[in-house]
Image 1 (cartoon, rainbow, N blue to C red):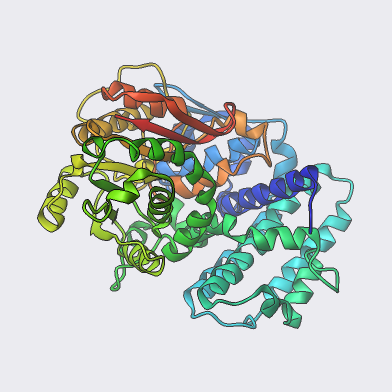
Image 2: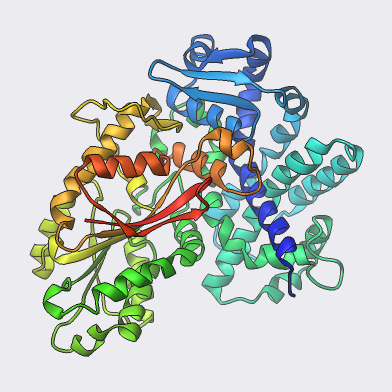
Length: 519
């Protein structure tokens, strides 16, 4: 089914707005139950500190994340200064408040999907009636509110995302695990009924919308993998959330479905791997004495990046001729044991030799020690690569003070505590200072995720999944900063950025992903 450029743009916009809906629905439902929106409607302009005085049951850090997400949707404005975070309602707020009950109704879906993902895969779906009920509710609301442009363009799409995206992930993820074809699902009457209600199936075959979203189901994976947070949003904002940061008796994380996260990120990030090629080909075509002994991917996920790099070196560089006498050392390092198992399994399946090692990105000295102990190689002898990891380091309280005026517009928390943006910036500088001794010889090539100012995001709805990034990462204590703040931290750490290998996506205005070689 061939799509025009405009049709693809419209469907991509739908996919991004679906993720917006997943990100903000549980937040809206929780804030509505606590009458936060009534308070904002009365006061118009306030601060996070003032809201907390009125509603002391909220955890400051996560409330800050929640409010910023609504600013990215244009419902509030959000301003960070050295002294406070200012909040103000926008002209859109009144219309939003009239529709907030829709989000409260759809919030129950997170319980349904949370329980579904925790059970062994079963198909046909058990108890799909809740999905039919809400799909019918949405269809009826679209009809009744047919002249309400805000509901039709934004809210209805948000609600559809909460209903549909987790289901597509459930089917797509398990289809990959079980080697099932899409036709297996379409043979079930209950799925066809639901897909017909949501305009994914016309009675004979998948519609353009249905085919596109099924094919792109992995693109929802990372956002949907944080369903445990959405299901327990009330607890994150007002209760005892600490157990979600602990691992169960099998070592699995409680705040995220890591297998789904790895699956989704592997598929979504494949687009960026090609930009690594030019620098890697250059490095591994140098004289052997100037080449690194190998490559280490810290935060290896499912091993997709290492597999890509090995194939590239094997097929496009002269290093292939030396692999017999000078074996290329490939190491996957990760903090998560499930990711290490996934890397080992996938690389063995792909016929790629590689070792794995447990490693914390915030402690390169320990990674270096393990490499020398296990494999007789130093961290500095390897080319360091990593994808979407530096923002996911454990937060270390900075030793020094941040003196620059460049502040991120992000909302950051550590175990519920609100982090000042200047401390986040200084901590990032000191993080890179730790890595500096280990990347001076062969460098660090990385892909990184960034936030974007809520003002910019609100003017570009449907063009970026930034709201979903901010929510999922903010509630899981990750620290995505703007590209300019990130690059400034690298420079302040005394590390050089190679301008010939520096890329940003999707554009200069909305840079949510960057690729850089630093040394």
